[in-house]
Image 1 (tube, one colour):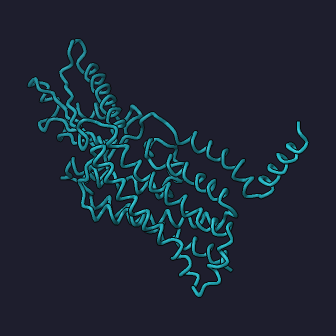
Image 2 (image 1 turned 180 degrees about the vertical axis):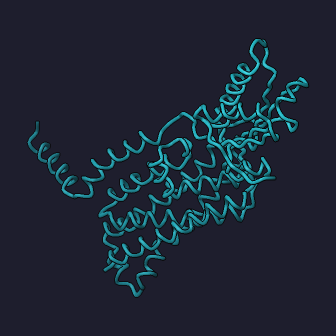
Image 3 (image 1 turned 90 degrees about the vertical axis):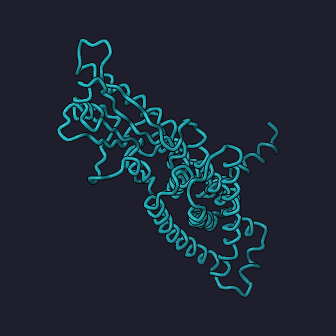
Length: 366
């Protein structure tokens, strides 16, 4: 090998690996992310929240319901008396609701009309198909055991699909991808902004300007908040015009959710930029945050399928709350309980992210 070329390659490797932060990004991040991905990724649908509305003393329905919960796919949902089944699904407290006949399933079977209804939340089309398949299999198996000898078990099963009757995957994926794109753009742009100023030598000029630390931070972040909000509006418009994703909830909910989320992501990007020494580290740091955030957000895989330890970490992911907000607002009409719960969590995370970013940024200036 050419000696000059070998020396040049050695210099490049030495320059890349001499920084402890770069070594952590290159060798530590892949191990951490592989562990998280291996635990979080699962195509099997489990922990389906099922509510049942049986008639009083309906022993047959209770036995069939026991088969649902014993399958390992469903978990019980408890609700106060007089609760509306559709409201349970709209608020996200249930993924499916099983409704037997009002007179009782056994009595309806005797009259020749043993028909049960299953309401399914199809805002996640993949999950809805699994719920329908699981439900039909369990009811058919339970009915065959209850009525041995009959060629056609007398218990029938009707499925009513809510919020996405055609079960189109785009209705579920597009709102999630919207949040993912806004997250990607704002974090990467913001993370590289301060490091870019430092690399080209203009950061000292900014520091010497007659501005307070807070004013310098606002000047570096507010433009990216504005750009993030513009991007959020564009992706909502594109989802509506190109993919036909409806906007059933009020626009003020979309705007407020987007604002709080963008403040979170811009603050995270600013925090990454204060830790990184150059644009290369800022880019890698941004992706180190983004990949786990996307996979634990529920964009592609239900969070409920993940192990408990991973779910606990997912509740620190702002993208998870934003995806839930967008799907609820666009597909379900914006249930207020869901909106305020998730927006409140995002607001608390925004306060924490802004505080950390400001402290790190002030240390950078000093």
